Image (cartoon, rainbow, N blue to C red; front, side):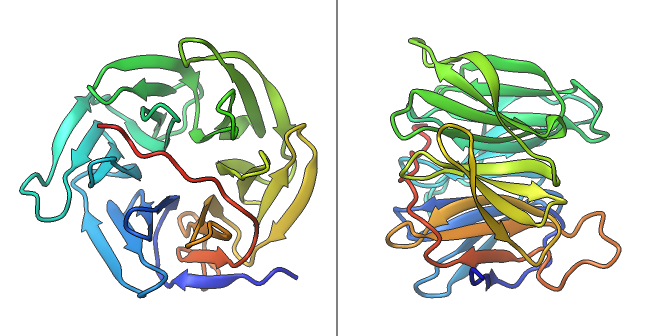
Length: 283
């Protein structure tokens, strides 16, 4: 059995979006409903917590330092620590009843950010591309729970999850760097696909909400590995550590009457595979 360890003991209501910040040597993750951004340095054990004024769907490293954040009312920027630039909006578009969810940085340094309705109304969410200058391009405007997004190692494919469909879909990346040719890549029967990451072999790892596991799919869509977890609601996964070999998994407690003691914590599976370096937001 693969060893699952607790990297950070926490009681996050909805832990999400782990990302390895190679510049700082730390994992960045969020508690969506707790309005918190967490960081963890596995070498030193150092942790930080940033409180946000709104529910936060994702936080990703910026090329110049600091973080880009997907918040309830739009996308904003935190400057590097001590820079005197604590926060500013890059794109603000509040919609009553809607919040931010997962996001990912594309190979070109743009942010692909998702939204969803609090009541999870079908078609109430979106997927958009935010350029470093704040220009917005609509990718999808009829999703329900916009979730995991990731690119193949060569950047020619993009994978995407709208959780209630129980599918991972795949697109080709067109000449304008926008997706074309959406089609099913893999279907999940036990639980709902949530956040995902792509490894150095081009395999897709996806956390299964209410499935208590992380699945790995080969580039042709075949399930070839199952990591069983003690928690019912893993939410997302990412490779981290010095060699990008450790798989970090965020988890949730929300909606559970008797959550496992590890629910809400940041978990890690040492030596699970080999990840890809993740791009930083170019803004």
